Length: 162
Image 1 (cartoon, rainbow, N blue to C red):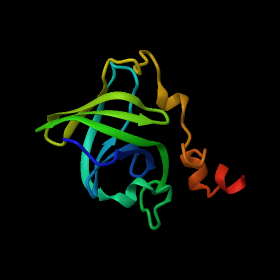
Image 2 (image 1 turned 120 degrees about the vertical axis):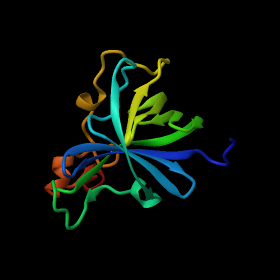
Image 3 (image 1 turned 90 degrees about the vertical axis):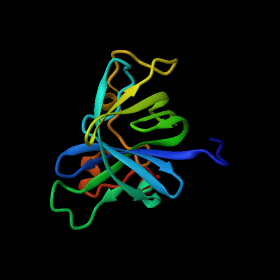
Image 4 (image 1 turned 180 degrees about the horizontal axis):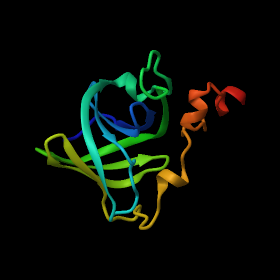
């Protein structure tokens, strides 16, 4: 399935009912989305729960800040990672894709394992890092350099001070 330009992906870190990561993949004019409670991993032995959520508009790929009127959590969102991706395969209950982001690189797969239950795994390739914990090692936004807590407090990011 050839495409004219690379599709975008974003991984947001969102303080809502619970702190979780949002994986968003651009498919045409929507962002298909999964909530990933523990975030992505670069270790191919680690399987991460991914719960599908409603498609979002493409503006969701650009949002970093605090959702106004949030009733649970602070509503703070950071762009934890972003870049482009190439879809390798798509069939019912399975997506395979290659990410080219700031933090995440290489092949990943999302596989449906039950109703509203998918698993996100890093494929074994040159970008795999067995034993690594990219979520703990790199907690800051790739856009502003802020943590979600700094966003919640309204602290300025790198770009606002440089």
